[in-house]
Length: 315
Image (cartoon, rainbow, N blue to C red):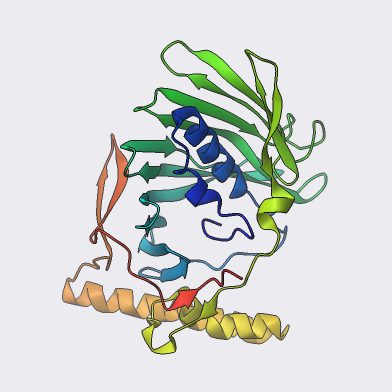
């Protein structure tokens, strides 16, 4: 979702204003833009150890790697030298079962750095709520918190219906605020729906403006294409799951299952081989560490992400 916006480049907007509050509201709008509907009943591909995804859109280059399988930990590094932006994410999912639903918490850190401003925006990811009863469905839920220590600004975004089962409250609701962290002073109140519009109200003046318009942002989205076939690594997601994807598009579910089982069995073979040699798997693009106090930390091994063989067309 990081690079899958349409006619509006939400990420580059974050570094354009000379005003720190305007930059912060742009970051909040960008974080909302990453919320997309998740179809119920469509099982995601289970990432395999070492699986990567390398893609570019304009001057933004994005690189992801699955750095751990048990537990599943994903790392992301993205850079845009033109707009002086860097992103570092390291996160893993923790499912919690509640009988009629599963809430998947995404633990770990997300950092957005505006390099020429000297600002780092720290944020968490929303939870994905999967309901089985009484009505099957999915929702983004929980509270997303964003803070920038350098500007002293913070935000809270409360997502999802007020009821855990989704029986009451508005669907895809966003409620929240932007505030000064030191004085806990609310500057802007936020309200709306992440699949439509989210408005912000200036507490001092009462002025109401549109913070985020989903139709504007998502219109004209393009599908990534392979620009350099020779440059695509064997660990690239599109290559790892190519047979599974082809079978799904052909609605050959038995073949898709067989192809998925082949990928997973191959991983078991590689694991047994490493264990027999006493070898430890090492990520290609990140240095990974873990501590009980700080959790998982994934540091990129390169300063800038290079242009990718897979690109998202700009027009």
